Image (cartoon, rainbow, N blue to C red; front, top):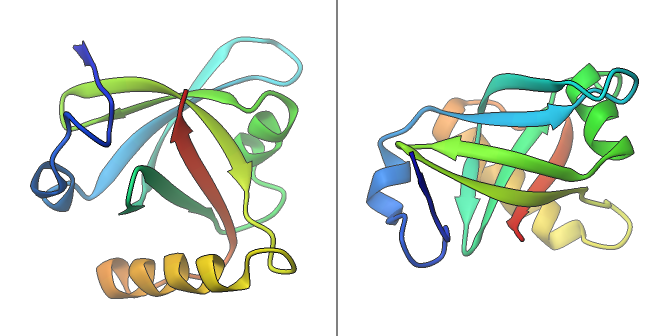
Length: 117
């Protein structure tokens, strides 16, 4: 599997055909890698995922250790995850939720940005 820069090597058409990306976090207690398959959207250089529940274990893991690995369309890269703030970034939050609604018919929950590092 190749390492990629999502802004230059992974074309929008590559990600448009994908329904899921694979997100690997580190267990906040065990330190072991934990991979999930999750719906995503992409805007610019960033990927976005949404946790249905604020108590999701993968969300708790990335809050404790924001460095994650993303795998999509046969490529992978290291990323920094951060939870979007409704107070500080309402326009971005709404835009990502709308992208998710268009793609999946759902966009509620905790929005997380994945930016390559």
